[in-house]
Image (cartoon, rainbow, N blue to C red):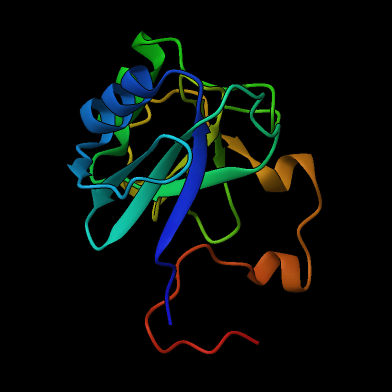
Length: 157
C-alpha cells in the first residue's frame, strides 16, 4: 500500500537526530527498546528509523525526501558543506520530465536525495548549476518517459 518507514544507520545518534530534526523538521517519536539503540522520527505520515551502528554508509543506497522549499534546502546544504558531487556526478540534477534531485550526505555518511517536482519553478540565480541527466546519458524510449512524480492512481506503462 505504501512505505511505512526507512531505517538507516547513525554513527553518532545525537548528531544524526539533530541533523534530521533541524534540517527537515522531523519529530522525535517514542522508540521501543531493541537490542541496539534505535530512534524513530516522524516526517508527515512516514517514519525514519536511526540505528546506532559504527559502520560505513552504503555508497549509493539512499533515502529520498520531498522538500517544501528546494531553494532554501540548497542554500542550507551548500552553507553546511553537505552537497555530494561525487556519487552521481552532480549535486543537483534535472531528470526527464523536469523533476530535480539534490544529493547530500548526513553526519553518518548516508546519502540523502532531496526532490522537487518542477525545474521551471526554481530560481536559477539561487541554484545556478543544475545538470541535465539527458546531457550526460541518452534518454530515449522508456527512459525518456520516466517520471519521478506520478498522480495517485496513475498506471505507468
